[in-house]
Length: 212
Image (tube, rainbow, N blue to C red; front, side, top):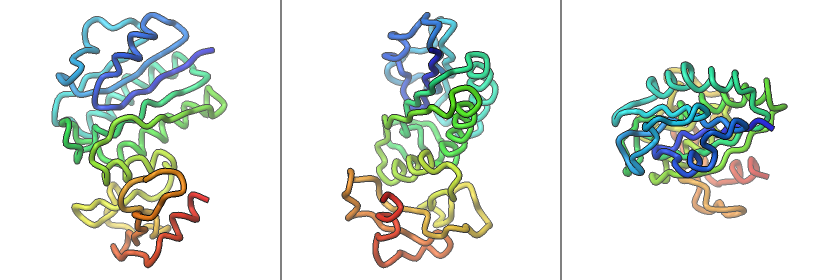
């Protein structure tokens, strides 16, 4: 079987590269801040490793260029029968541990692109595994669109507007949860917010019902 590993964590996935380097069954595509720990990923990677280092301060434009010009071409050539995502959200602009400037809109966009690749080649088989992310509000706002990539984007706390969808109303106004996931069945600290008015919903029943 042909497998693709997609890694957008801010740190290079050196362990994944070490395991699958030169294994023709596996394609790894990644972006990461460089230089940054573990200070690797740029020294003559194997042909099945599509590593795209990004300089500190790089934002969504640089990320999307890497995906469009490097990742998608390699993925189409590989025709993966399964896609595994190493979903680290520490490349978010609010994360304190590194210096990339991605937003939740970028994570939602790349998820839609990968879902489309999975639909073409893998009968929709795609698995996302949570990795880094150390600004909890940003982590929650970034992870949610990867599960619901076609939904309206969460609220940007700096502007109190919907990130990436400025200047228009959102059809499902309660599509934001402040704070991050606490664990299965535990939603006590989470608040649904109307993204059109920034008014807090009186209770969390919307979010609890959404998760089932």
